[in-house]
Image 1 (cartoon, helix red, strand yellow):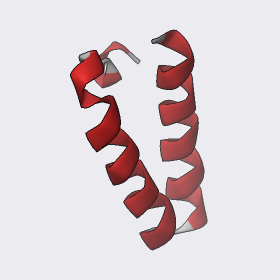
Image 2 (cartoon, helix red, strand yellow):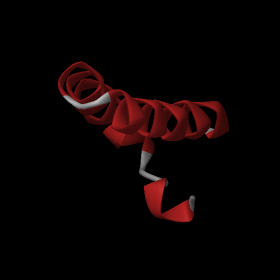
Image 3 (cartoon, rainbow, N blue to C red):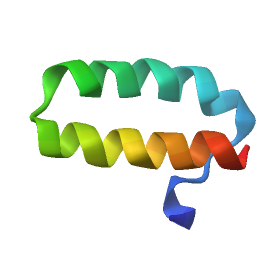
Length: 44
């Protein structure tokens, strides 16, 4: 999980990228990416 740790300045770009991913990839990838993003958000 540590490889997904980003500086706080990266939160906004990460949000934009995650929304793009959620809308444009299959459900399995969606769920994986969303769970990683949520886990990251909770640790900030």
